[in-house]
Amino acid sequence: MKEEIRKFFDEEKIAYAEALSYADARETAPHILARADLSPRSLLVFLLPYYAGETDNLSVYAAAKDYHLAIREVTDRLIAHLSVLFPDSHSVGFGDHSPIDERHAALAAGLGILGENGLLINETYGTYVFIADILTDISPEALGAVAPHALVRCEGCGACHRACPTGILRGESENCLSAVTQRKGDLTDEEIALMKKCNTVWGCDLCQSACPHNRAPKVTPLAFFREERIPRLTREILDGMDKKAFKERAFAWRGRRVVERNLDALGYDK
Image (cartoon, rainbow, N blue to C red):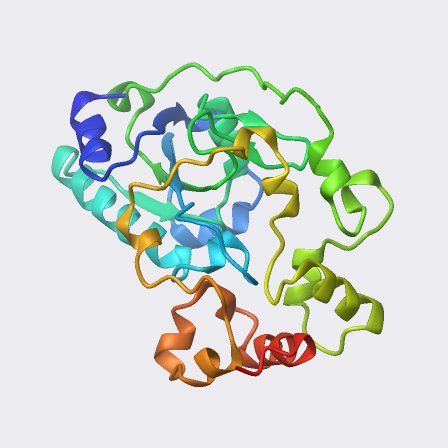
């Protein structure tokens, strides 16, 4: 990667970032690219580590404010930086909803290996990372793009499979507990019982916490994920949020009623 761009990531405290030719990406949503009105020649893919301590009844990623806000802040600053370095360029940022398979791009860029639970495993931050990308019409040569890395899989110890509470990783179910907690509508008695057993009102980290690569997770250097955390969500905390504050949380995207339902089902009334 070119020195000027590497310096940007260093200043953002982002240690894992790389440039690729767009030809080495796996395009999965061309309609998103069409809306962006962009003919990309290359991309920048980078990781935002988010682990900032354990949580009680929320997935670790949901303790901080919505990670999409962090991705947008970084991508906006990076695009502004690229526009200075390459005045005639056109770049668009993505995170979690991209024209490309972001996990594939991160693997191809050498930012980690593939876990049996389908997650990217980074050598420093384990699976506790978000993937973001910038697609741009800047040439791969100008960005210092690397040749794509071969896919490397984890050791296959099976810890994540054994820890999975629904058995979806073992092929025993079609439901992930994280998806259950985020589903609208009524939950079955069995689903509520499983949420109680795993003490979760939003998300599930059991396959991650069981992974040996997460045995001693490193705390993120990014202030966004260390500040305004809610390790334990209660009905009192939720009721104290106005619309703006609620909308900024990672657990807000399915609406307040879903979160209220989960809290009430698990008895978190205070």
